[in-house]
Image (cartoon, rainbow, N blue to C red; front, side, top):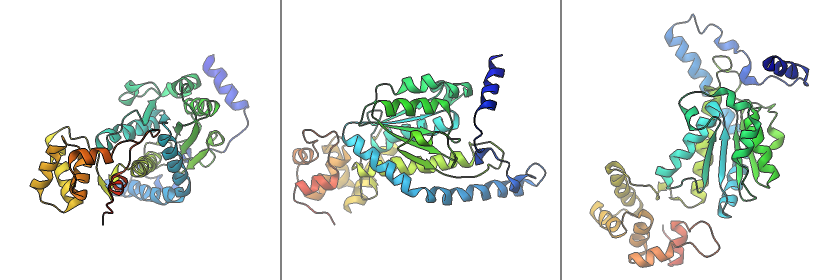
Length: 319
């Protein structure tokens, strides 16, 4: 009876345009009878359209990036919130920031409906739990960003988080593939990437998921660049937890300085593997203590200077 009552309530509510992600795709109606080669072509042709859809959302993505950078510099964090594929995309993006940029939950916190167990085993019913979404971000403040991810733009779990975020003064972002997203008014920055109908009707792990990955890659990467986690287009806060990554540190330092590998390896040894300090040492021609001092976080700031800012403190302007 509960399920029937739920369907009845939906039936009595005001009609809302169907999300394009739920529409039937006329270009793939014969996908089950064509050759494997044609099937692959159909799917990849649909995927090719995602790039243009993401590009059309660039202005909103820029807004979200600037908003997040401002918040993190003020001591805030980005909270990704989603269910199903959307939540897994947020979890994946946040997890990758630690080995790539040395950033963990002090800046990016992922929340997946149903908990970590839902990463491997679907917990689709969890997406209807408004209270659970709200509880996850009940301690956010004005410097935080609640970033909801929902292909349909209608997920109650995400809506609960956005409402709670707004009530506590946090800034809010929504990433959806539905231009009619019901949750859009709850977001300060709605990023609505219209990816259209899926190759398999309603399978939003396909184009919508691809769009989410692209947007999140761009968003988090740009935030990291703005926070000084790169020097030029080189990663300078890689956590060298294995031999492959230790070799990468040497390679990154040689690329940044044009110096021999053994010189770079010695600088890394002198800084206990701190790539940023080694880079400042080599470019500025200073010792470890001067490099570390130049990279120190100033009182009242929550993030440290970039390598370029540290070099400027030492009176060096790199080429």
